[in-house]
Length: 84
Image 1 (spheres, rainbow, N blue to C red):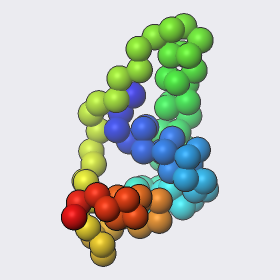
Image 2 (image 1 turned 120 degrees about the vertical axis):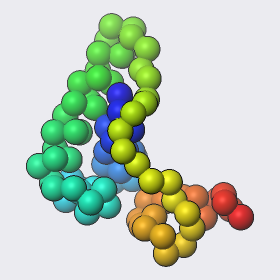
Image 3 (image 1 turned 45 degrees about the vertical axis):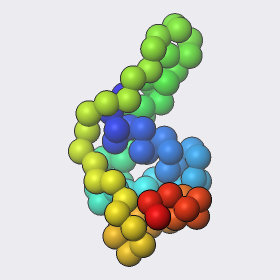
């Protein structure tokens, strides 16, 4: 699973974002999120059903650098005191 696929699962399934909100957060088109999300769910299903190891790797991403640096809704880094 790519980091982008992981992020769509985190934003949509864990944080409750819509696909449109997820697309804005990730700065991609909603149709791109739709495809990434479908592929991520397929890989999760294969892992669960077939007992495959699920690795998270690759993709393009930027780590949160603090308040006002593009974290947006769903970032828990500062609520938990991370990065201080």
